[in-house]
Image (cartoon, rainbow, N blue to C red; front, top):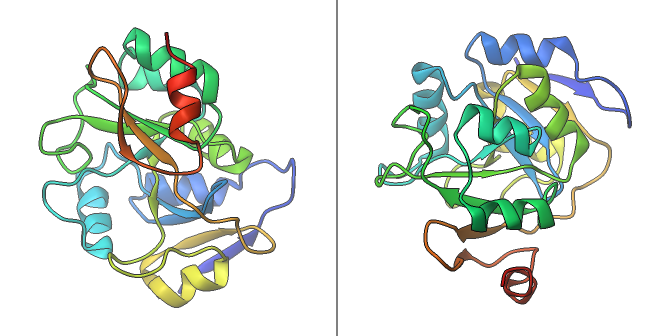
Length: 207
């Protein structure tokens, strides 16, 4: 059975959501783009279950969201100078950065080259959920691979049913559109996926 908890603006994240993640369960939550699926990335069994639910390819990592830049760097490792500049410009917001973490992460989280993708989202409930957990959480879209990502709680339940233990339900449909993904491992940013933040804006923000 999937439980749904309505979210009100400014309301604290329900303890039930944090407890579910600590038990290794899957929680759906709203971001500023679409609904995301959270598990505790430090729990290999939870990560493996999420990958199975998503139908995630073996070479693809699972993106993370964090509550703040401080949480990113304390839990994953320092961003390179290029990444810090982009983070300070666009976070909180729909810009995902790919870098090499110094922290040891589950192989189901990182890509085949051991890089990780992370962002601090513009949606306050998503940030507060990561902060309440005390560490980043997964942020893959709420849909099986190949299907349209969920923009409402009803769509999450229709697509995924009881495999999601709890839905943090925001009124109305989310705006949709993916985050922009940028690789920051080199001396210049590399566009991996176009999204809400335009590539021109990214390029204008770096020397």
